[in-house]
Length: 211
Image (cartoon, rainbow, N blue to C red):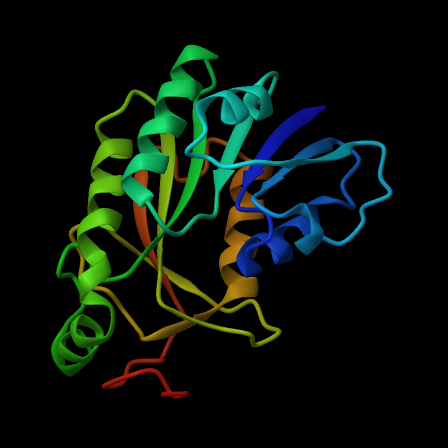
C-alpha cells in the first residue's frame, strides 16, 4: 500500500485530489490540515486526519512518519513551510514531493497578461520563488506545479510548460491540477525533478476570463 501525506488537505485542489484518491484501495491517505473541521468525514479504513501546522516541526514529523510521498498544497509562509518539509523528509528518508506553486515566479508569463498578473499577485512572488528554489536545491525527487489562475470548472483540460519556457494560457481548473497530482501519485517517476507550468489550452488572453 502506498502511503501519501496531503499537507493543506482542506485546500480546494487537494479536495479534488482526495476525492479521486480515496476510492483507490492501494492508497493510504493522511490528511493534514490546520482545522480538521473543514474536512468532510472520511469513514475509510485507509484514511486518517491530523490537525496541525506545517511550521510546527514536531507536528509535521509525526504526520510524515511512515509516508511514501508528500503532496503539499499550501499557502502562507511558503519559504518556512518548504524548509520544514525538506528537513523532515530528509530526516525520515522520504524522497517524493509534489508541491503546488504559482505562475509568474520566473517572469515566465508573456505579454499583457504578465503586466496584469504582476500587478495582481506580484507581491507574493518572492516567497513562492524562494520555496521553489529551496525544493529544487534539495536532494528530493520533487515536482513543482506552477498553476495558472484557478477556476471551479468541472473539467480536466490542461497542458504543461517546462521551466525556462514561456507560460501558456491564463486559467486552469482546480480539478485539472488535482488530476495531474493524482497521475504523479499513481506513477511517482512521472515528472520527477521537474518544474511545470499548468494551464488550460487556448486560454491565452490579457487576463483571466472571470476578472
